[in-house]
Length: 282
Ligand code: PAF
Picture 1 (tube, rainbow, N blue to C red):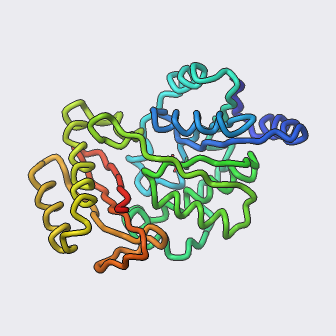
Picture 2 (spheres, helix red, strand yellow):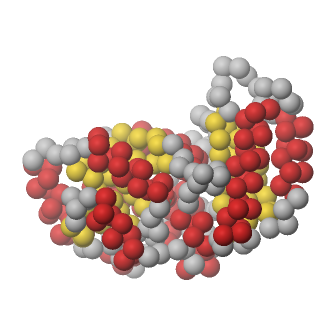
C-alpha cells in the first residue's frame, strides 16, 4: 500500500494515474476505521481500477474543540486493516498544516437550505467545514466515484447538492448503513462507548424501527410521543433531535404526502457520546 502525506508527491502520482486513464474510487474518512468504512472500500475496489482512501480529521467541521481533540484515532491500526483488505490501496494522510497552511477556516457554500435542520442546526458551520475539505480533496484526487454511507444522510444529501452545484465531474455513490447484529449503526464514535453503553445505544435503532413499523398507522404526534417516552426510560440517553423529514429537501414534516419519501432522523447523547442515526420509511 502506498501512503502519501505530502500534496506535491500525491499530485505527481495522481497525474501519472490519470494519464493511464485509470478509474478512481475515493473514500474520504477521518480514520478510526470500522466495518462501515471497509464496506465502502470493498465496493470501491469492485467498481474502480484503483481505490484511494483519505484519513484526515478535519478541524473546520468541528464546532467544539473538545470534540475535535477527543475524536478517536488509531492510524497504525487503520493502516494494518487497510493492508489486509488490499496491498493496492492508496492512502492519503496529510497533516492539518499540509491541508490548511496554517489558515484553518472554512470557505462559504450554499446548500440550498439543506443545512437548516438537524446537524446543520445543532453543529454550527459543520457542513461548511465538510464541504471545505471535500472541495480540496475532490480537486486533488479528481475521483470518478466517491463513496458515502447513508448513516450520515444529511451529509450525503449536502454533498450531492454541492457536487452538482459546483459542477464536479464525479458520481456520489450512496452506500447502506452497516450495523452491529443488534442494530447499532457503525460509527467511529462508538469506540468511545463501553460495552454496556453500546448496548444502550441500540435503543436508538429500536426507536427508529418503531417509527418505520408504525408510520402508516399512527399519527405524527403519537409517534413522536412514543419515541420520546421509550427513550426517556434510559437515563444514559438524551435526545438532541428526533424528526421525520422529506428525504430530498430534509424539511421536517407534520403531514404525509404519499408521493414523497421520508426518513426518521435522530441525534442523541448516549453516555456522553453524541450519536446520529436514521431510517428510511418506505
Ligand atoms: O464523514 C466523515 O467522515 C467526514 O465528514 C468526511 C466526509 C471525511 C469529511 O471530513
